[in-house]
Image 1 (spheres, rainbow, N blue to C red):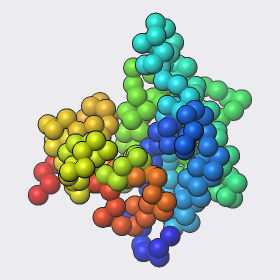
Image 2 (cartoon, rainbow, N blue to C red):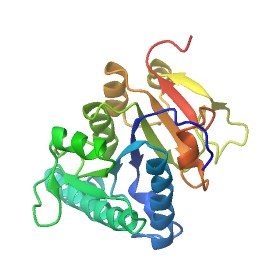
Image 3 (cartoon, rainbow, N blue to C red):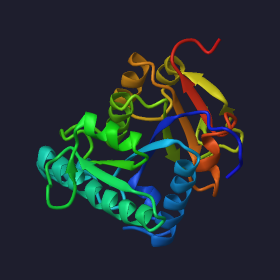
Image 4 (cartoon, one colour):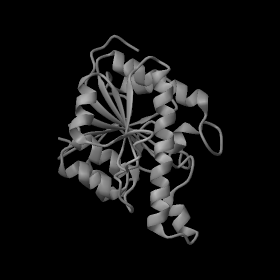
Length: 244
């Protein structure tokens, strides 16, 4: 990591479950999760407090189960439990880098992790521990994007950083359209009016209403995760209010 001074003091990193798969079609790629953990360590070593929210798309989604006929609430609860599995895997990888880490779940699973308590989470962060938030919001019908927005706001993060498979936000799908234009900066109103698929609408509105800045970057670019906290040119910034 560069020796530049971090832009942020406290961040919330939103990871998709798919980010843990690597080139696999299912599950967790141990090499990928080890790299992510190593880059999180670089951020911690730079003096930045780190919270993480992880999805469960590498295992399954409640919506997908509901589409197949399962009760939606049941499916979402299963999805929440799957996120905890990912949280425990990342915790193990981070601790292998000698960084203290806590998993806090919105559902009570005392045998494997702590309950999410806002003040306790903030205390962990202040002590330099990485905090991984599991089980989404603890409620069905809400995505882990919404959980990421909610936790970022609750812990008073300076920014919500979302890891994706592309290096920012484009006006169209850059995979399908080679002429797609990348945005360096957008307002939340831009995102909503253009219908850009940055996060789900609930998550976007929550960030907008609470003035939570958002950064979008490509997790697949090795080194971009630690770089995004010191370099404003990485990815796309989404800010409250008018860009001007």
